[in-house]
Length: 160
Image (tube, rainbow, N blue to C red; front, side, top):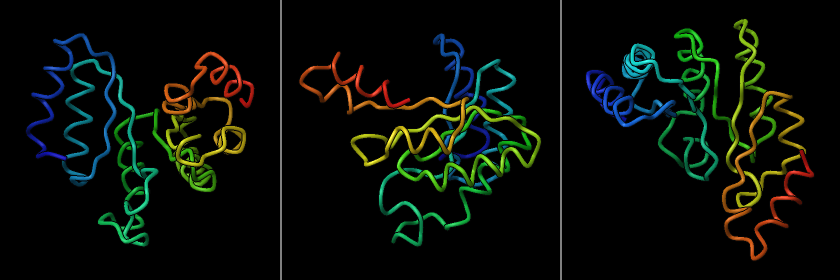
């Protein structure tokens, strides 16, 4: 959430630090989104673009700041810029399916990443079904807050 010109500096610093890929949630608008994507591409960084987040109070319809149709526009701008990897809300399988279909309608077979699972109520099996085979379940607290982390990891991966 910065101005377009700062994307070049951000990408340069990331590349110099050995970063391989960046995740953008382009809430500063389409001009900034396009500029930051181009800067990351020019620096040789992989890009994962987000749109809708998982927490309450994000979208205007849920008393948030972001217009309800903005995530769709964020994903569309990213697709037009050549992005193929996207963050989609793991606790909203109907939205995963909607955003996946949107990206596919533009001729892209997306790779999806989903936070919002386990601790935020998302079900791995249900979200995975909506996302398809090119999907990465992000289960952070589902493992690191578990007493037996190995057992939690085994149980969670069994749901894939």
